[in-house]
Length: 339
Ligand SMILES: NC(=O)c1ccc[n+]([C@@H]2O[C@H](COP(=O)([O-])OP(=O)(O)OC[C@H]3O[C@@H](n4cnc5c(N)ncnc54)[C@H](OP(=O)(O)O)[C@@H]3O)[C@@H](O)[C@H]2O)c1
Image (cartoon, rainbow, N blue to C red):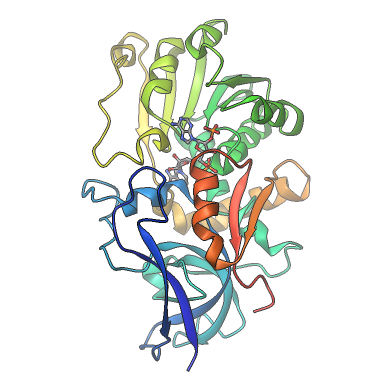
């Protein structure tokens, strides 16, 4: 018998108090059912969107996680047992599993994928080649439809999705404005990512600063929602596009935030606002990956990894990500690649 430690959702968290809401449990692993795959978790991905699954809201893009369930999240690791021949033992895979030492998945439900094992640092399957990168690519290129020479604004710009979105914007020839919290993040945006302008939403008057952009902003990749969206809408160019990627300002609310106060600008400026959700695009990986891989190999697409060690430190890492203490992609090393 193998013992498996896992994080269980006991209560809906209040704010970022995850320690009162989740507990570290253990079990003896049951036998695999037909069609299931078991993965030794190498790393866990800390994703802002999963915060909504902890809330009781039933109007999200998927139902809330039942209390008493194992917390769900993206897992990167190697198959240790398999009852699906497409996922052989030893294969490097990524999919929606559990915050646990061993994740048990039904491939079609977990979006489980066999990954390229030749990538020098396999953690990049959570970085420049991961879901945040796919999100950045779809959001900037297709939904925001950015064209060379246009102004693109990205919020939560020093986080995983945002930092990759800034780089996708630059690779597509846009002028990029990154918005993030604090001077260290703004320095990272200009010095490491090469954005044209970095704005600190905690210190700068965002509406006034964007008002200096002649002709307005053509595209906005919105990771935040809330008051920041209201600062940007009156500064959009005519026929501008807003790609609604996330609403991290509202994820710890158990109820939706009121809509944008400046919604009138959608009409006045003839804007297009469109939400998108990356699991809807999983079937197009073969199309995105070569582009992302090429940019990554050329040194044009990278994200710093903020790695915590040990399953027991998952909640601290999750808070680091959501409360903005980290730059780049927050991950937790559970077993690494040693199995
Ligand atoms: N649509 C999709 O399919 C999809 C897929 C992946 C991610 N996303 C979205 O992308 C966004 C970022 O997710 P991520 O997983 O990459 O996390 P992340 O950006 O690495 O971390 C979250 C960031 O949010 C910022 N933040 C937190 N509260 C904020 C607030 N009230 N106002 C402004 N900024 C705030 C923090 O940065 P600061 O220090 O700058 O505040 C923090 O770095 C989320 O909205 C997520 O839902 C969407």
